[in-house]
Image 1: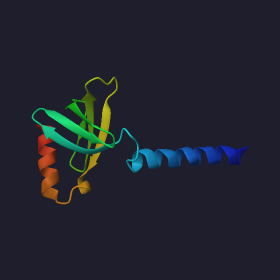
Image 2: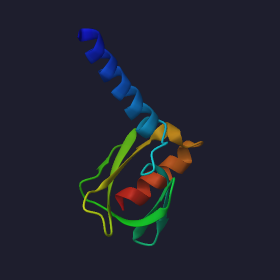
Image 3: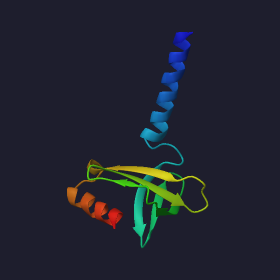
Image 4: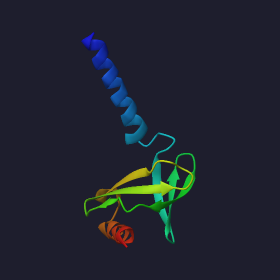
Length: 100
């Protein structure tokens, strides 16, 4: 019985990892661009216009951004790490855009 339970937990863990960790899910956010006051969230299946929520957490090493997408009930969350950019200057520019 324990082996079946452990197998189910590991299987669900791999499912979550492949769907959200590797950005293969259809609702995964692949890229973010800014258009004036709005943000455009680019995903695997489509692009959506969203507003950045005040409940976002912005620090120097990581940004946890929460977006309210029009027509959606729940907020979309995107985590951006400092090392996801090729140059530190690019992250600084992004960081300044988010906090302004």
